[in-house]
Image (cartoon, rainbow over all chains, first blue to last red; front, top):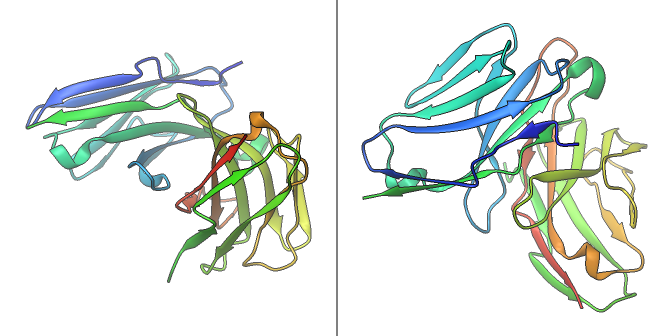
Length: 114
Length: 115
């Protein structure tokens, strides 16, 4: 049973445009959500996070939106750059239930074309 | 700080062989984790540790063992390698507090092939 789903395996965007990556979850106990970015042959690196008490968090070109009623979050990258081409993983945690453990989605491959 | 380091980077094993994947962190994190990532899949938690001497199973622990004798090191042991254990293995570490979430820091991974 996949608790965190990223239904788009890949996304292709033109440089300078907006990239929107989506993530759905099923466990209503999740109280913290993170996005990780992964380049080939490297480990995932933390990108941005959001607590369940917020609906938006922004960090430079990256913004994460959380819709708790729909159990949906999205990552917006504006403007997209070729260096953003990577695999993006959505992850969720429930401190009370899982401690610091994370549940990951399958990832979305983002390709930014120049 | 080197962060989280893993050795080896690559390894090919024959069925039935054993090996230990090494993981070391220099951030004094109390929590450490082992994940595997199969093609087209997200990361699955194998084992984790909340501190030296304390380990627990994750989602996919079968075929693996771990130990945590120091804060810095968290080796993963494969006793009887099987083709199903062909994967990329990531070690991670984090600080844990009950009041706030702290992100996990990942190593570069070990690509393991079992033939």
